[in-house]
Length: 334
Length: 211
Image (tube, rainbow over all chains, first blue to last red; front, side, top):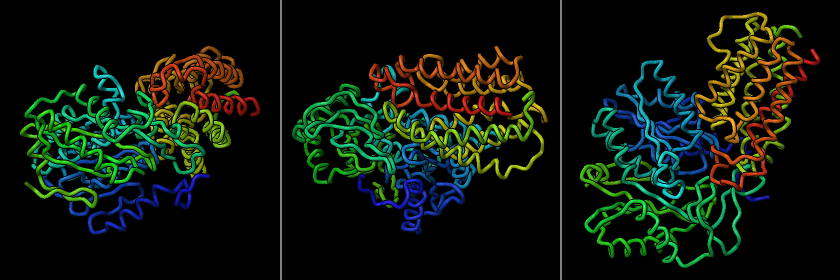
């Protein structure tokens, strides 16, 4: 039996959200009857940003509900999309009257449930749109972008979309700006150890003691290559090469960087990765405009990390630099 | 059973739900081989919610209403891809139908065929993609072919077709879900969603034969 500090595997999401909302009650309120997190001080007269997905990736998604970020999060069971009723309740509670943008990872379950929720909201006359995060460049080749999954880069997508909402753009433009962010966003990760779903008998995958897997997904989806563990510099070099092969960078480009821990990898190791990543970007003449180092999108106790690069243009830079605040992510305005 | 009344519909759906709940460990095992391993957990949860709904459902004699309520309870409790797909199987063929006190076998087959259509429209899966469609589609074909022979014959034929459909998924590469990334490594394993479809049809056939 694997050790988990839980009460009942069937109630982990409800109990997680009870604790989460209570701890941050200054900012959040629950959505009665469903698993959702709602920002208390919502601005009206702007497009509403609703994020969501399966639980088990904390602090993604609910941790990025905040000022200048998402207005609400719809939370599913562990690694399973929220149902359309939950999404509708959360979205309706958050709606400020200017339409709703749904932002979520590109997975079959999320796509089906959010689509159905949009249908239901449409019948009530609420304007909606969606953008699906597909930053994981290891999850499908470039000619099948629609098959790519969403991972930690979702943080940057929420940051940009939230700022675009805050700037007062109409729904169609918020969507366009968010799509532009995704066009300029790539991530790739590697795993050193599996995570475990509460109540599941076995881990989401297995690796030999000295083995790592490149491109493994945040629900344990198989990656692209297994190899022996190597130095932080060697691993980082391999991941960086894969990103720039997919999204070429030129001298003079500006990027924001996210080095994300998958659950059980310490900050020490993430900073050692960042050190190498920074050196490689500098060698290529690429300027780092912002860096986030931490465990923003996890997979229970999975070991390993991912790297995300957001290539900036003038517009994306403006929205990245806009102020935001949530308990897990905050920026002063520049 | 010549026609299905409100009470029969409740009884048959209860049988389906109980069969899935009992099969939770089997479904979990099947799914863990090539999927997330959570199919049995999600299905059992949805079926329990659907059972709870049936227990509170007022008898208004409308058979379609029972199927719609059952599907809607699944839709609003399961989440994940299987929440939308499996609820459509019951909800989409039954909703917006005129109230009916007695459903004959051909109308039941038509309702299930509409559910299948809706599932394929939403999920985009075809025969051969290693999904629940590989069991449901032949089962619906069998229902239509045997609809004039009454419920028991029709549903047993559908059950057998679904079983063959489950077996056929072993040879397939998956085009959806986590198993997709396994490519040819998924060959040799049956699909969990197709397995659930077969369990449901087996429960329906047993119910029809004993009532």
